[in-house]
Amino acid sequence: QRYWIATVVHAICHPVHEMCIPHISSEFPGEMCNELELSTGNGMPMFLNGAAGDTNPPTVSMGPEYSHRHGIALAKLVQSPEHQLLLDTSVFAFTNSKVQLPIRPKSNVTNVLDAMARFSAIRIGSLAILFLPGEPFIEIALDIEKSSPFEHTIIVGYSENNIGYIPTEQAFSQGGYEVGPGKWSFLQKGTDQVILIYALKLLEKLFNK
Image (cartoon, rainbow, N blue to C red):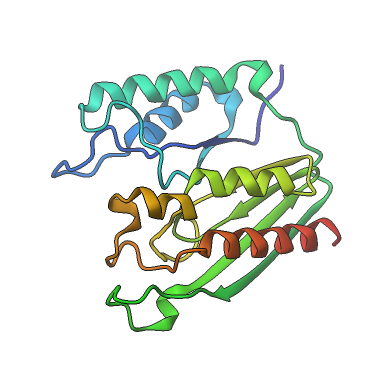
């Protein structure tokens, strides 16, 4: 029987089944971790939130029952062999970088350091885990994955400093809350391509270490 040191789960979805409630909730990641902890064979469960700036579950704000059901379903999915990735842990490396991003005019953000984006990346064998700042749209993560030099690449959002939403250029023409402008969305149009370029530079650096 195989026993895991840890079970790392990557999900591309806002954990907001219970958004706008007056109490703190661990949401479906917490429910998932509780379910995985029932078996000692899963090790320490860890949840990595993907680039989900524009991706919500279809049952937003519909109560804790949906959160519980989502977490249980995700835990069962994770434990099925076809969804598991075994890694060679003998190769490990880490790198990071930062870049100053442009601030949108009339966004009422005057401190340029608010738009200083930090990136980090970890290599474990054939897997790269890239940690992005802010709330990147899922399309940005997909573009990074397609061009990554690694066999497997996981893009994690909300994992560095808060620089607000990182929409795609197309999203600006569609409008909506995520493109603001406001304290939650103040980056200039085209920032998604800057993020893409610097993310791939970091992954190339990690790949060649």
